[in-house]
Structure formats: structure tokens, C-alpha cells
Image 1 (cartoon, helix red, strand yellow):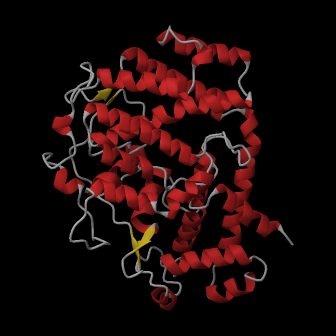
Image 2 (tube, one colour):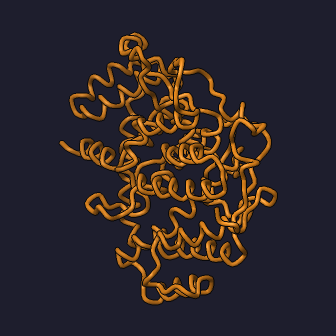
Length: 410
């Protein structure tokens, strides 16, 4: 243990922590076991890793839409980066590494296709129809609570039923918050009632670690991709070099990559944090982090080269939503049957979605051994539209494109 690093074991989430019982609480147990060698958070990690939502992250955009380029960061690579950063910090501060790994693995499981552009478009649709705001942190909680399922020992599909601490860390993970110091909240909350604008801090120090690691994990990697695409001018590259060298005078731009920046931020955080003060960076490092983030927004995320991609994503998502929305009516089954001749894949997959998550066909749901929650009441059009938004949000980029191509094909 580095003597410069504080010992957080007194606030570690374990049996000695007064928050422990609430942190490991869950609604029901989908697997009844007399004995298990895993702790509660390891079990949650395994459930998330086996979920379909996690698997689809490998084909979801992080920043740059690049289905043909294996070296551009995708959503699942970002999740891996966040997990590595969070585990490293937690290990050296003596926090619970199993808990941070579970939170990090599931934190973006509800992210829309096409990155934050997809999130923006789905929120615009939700706003248009006066539905609940779409934000990916809340949607990640929604997916792990209500959408993702695994079979029990009898083959019945059941919801994941994760522990409170993992669910809390996921819905509170937003790395866009620019607080210099992070301290966990003491109050227990109904997590589904948390709103994005509250910018709620996590219930555990482990959740706070993931929140900080989310920012550390993406900020350098996005610069790497921008440099590889050649979208930064010589002037912008010099500006970036000045930002970094004002803090890290021993580094040259040619030495800057995501691992170097991760290392610098991780060490600084560990050296300046304490259980009494909270998780925090030095003044210089915190300023550098904010300046780099500002640089990324001004020169990368809003770059004109991304505009065609954003327009493409908007066309795809709106087309899929509009096609499914127009089918709502008194006889939904008949409408689907007619449209299946023209759009077999889209209708099949959406109908399967409704069977699993709504009151569309309860007999079929029972026949398929689907014991998960009923999420949508299709007697209400708002509920139907919410089902479409959720259906689209779960798509990979590839599946959304294939669905769009089916719609426009004759």
C-alpha cells in the first residue's frame, strides 16, 4: 500500500458498515441456493455479464460511429475502461472491488444506440408525447429492474433482482457532474424516483468511485479516437498540449494516450482523497480535468464531421418509432399480422417484446415461461409508446440500421 493513499476500509461496504443490510437487500431471490461461494455483489456482476443488454454494448457507439473500424472505442470498451479505473482506485483505497466492478459493468446497460445522440433523440420523442424523460442512467436502472431477465433453475425467465447498492450506483453514475469532492449520501431512496436533474450522489463510496471513474474512463480515450480520425487541427492539438503540460510538465503530446491520462488522474485522486474529506483531486488536476472535458465538447463531440452521423441516427430512430407508433389501434394483433408481410423482422421482434413485457398476450407469455414483470398496459397509448422507446433503446447500432433498412425497402 502506498503510504500516500488513505485507507477507506472504515467506510468500505462490508458487514461492518451500518449500510450493509440495506445495500445487499433485494426484492426476491431468483435462485434458491443452500450454499454459494460468491458474495452478493459477485452474484450481481455475473447476472449483469450474462444479460443480453450487456452483450449488445459491443455494437453500440461510444462517440464515433465506426462499425468497420475495430480500433475505435465502442460502448463495451468504455465499460471495460470504467471498470478497470474503478477497480484500481477501490483496491488501493481498500474499498469493495466486487461492488465497484458490478456497478461499472452495468452502468451503461440502458444506453441507447448511436451514443448520446440516440439518447437525445429518444428524449425528444418522450418530450413530444409528454412521457417520462429519457436519460440513460435512469434507463439503465429501468433495464436491470424490469427488462433484463435470466432463466431460473426451472427455465422460467425472471428479472435480475440486483442488490440495492449496485442498482443505486448504476442510476447515480453520471460522470458529467463536475463536483470537486464526492461524498456518498446517507439517506436511503426509492431509486426509481431519482431524477436526472437531482444529480444524486451514490449511497456508497464504491458508487462514488464509479461516478468519478466514468469521467476518467472516457476523457482520454475520446481524444485518442479524435486524433486517429484526424479531426483536430494543429492549433487544437497545441491547445490540448498546453492544457496537459500546464499540469503535467513532464509529458509531451506524443506521449498522451488514455492509459497515461488514466494513470495520472487515478494517482492524483488516491493521493488527495480521505474518508473524512471524500474523493477528490488536487486543485491542478481537477482544473485540468475540467479543461480537457471542455476541450472535448468544443472540439470533438460537437465537430462538424459528426453532423452526418447525428442526422443519420435521427432518421433511423424516428423512422422506427413512427412505423411502430402508427400501428396502435383497437386490434393490435390484426395490425401486426398485416404489417408482418412487409416488415417481418421488425414486427416479429417488437411483438416478442410486447409478449414478454406487456399484457399483449398473457397466454403466450405463460406458455413461454416468462415470469418477469409486466411493464406496459397496452390499453393506454402512452404505455405503448413507452414500450417502443424502450424497445429502440435496447437495440444495438447494427440492429437499428437493419430494422431501418427493412422499413425503407420495397
